[in-house]
Image (cartoon, rainbow, N blue to C red; front, side, top):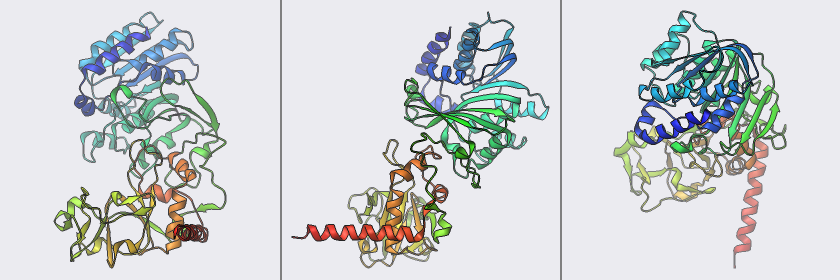
Length: 482
């Protein structure tokens, strides 16, 4: 019977254009993923009150009901509320759910109303008691003053995306001990924008299971979604305890690997930002560095900032190539490996910015810096790509401009000692740092906040590393001379 939902999914996915999918944030769950999600619920009995918010064509509910029909969960009754705002697919949803009418004491209701509004009303009138929720929420940003955002604030939920709103509401609607399984982007695990959502989740639920896909293109490959997704199981009002972390390359789950971690490996006790880490192996757990790597940036006397030059706001001051009244303007494209190359003739981006009273406050003195690109490409080998800004590369330029797609390590808006800049870049480019970063960052963006979250060796150790690198380069240069 579960194949009915999968046939409906493929049919609806093919006939729905990409623009509508994007407008609704609607990406339907493949059967294998839905079955895996349903299998994460612990065995239960008694009365089941099931929520499927953003039900689509019923893939998730069908997977849950399929498990019930096979006797893996022996409920005395099952009452399902399936919310789906897109009435065009209600027929397929009805078709999927009706296959399970033979289940004892099973009833379902398809609700076409806006889930956020309905959930907020239910919370305000204390009409919530779901024992189970299985959710593939829509993925779409919501503005600060949008209708959805204002509704959510009425129930003390503050978040920036529909997916996190749906999960927060599912938690709020659950009875004590209620189980929530959701497939969502991993972006909520870190960064300042999702901090209120992380607070809500961690304050009202316990994390029981996290599943990570190694390939970021496989969870919704039929819809060409290049978002790194996780599957998470939460327990409303649950006591904090060990967390099961599983991984698989893709949604076939053929190479499923599972490990249990103490909660302190998922949420570090001293982390004020409450980043959620997803370690993937006990043997190579780079979330636990040695005591020699325990410094914060503030301990090193270093700051990291986003490049201040937002090019479209300073368009009139930009120049394709350097001129008499300009200084170098650096983009990610000016960096290859650990070194920089400037200017680049024929580059689509400008190479220079006019230095005048309107731009002066955005400029840095020409000196040594370590820079990290804010965005890596979709399937790049490493997320963190660090380079060194070498002042000699820019001739007699007194100042430099750093474009907004770069993160810049500096000392009070001044340069770093050369050895420190080089040591910092080498350290950030290590596979250990990259794996550690991936444990809490699930997207291609590297923000200054994320770089502050990383632990570093001491300033002296970084300088020693930089001096060693400089010595190696000097030796290679001598060998290369005829």
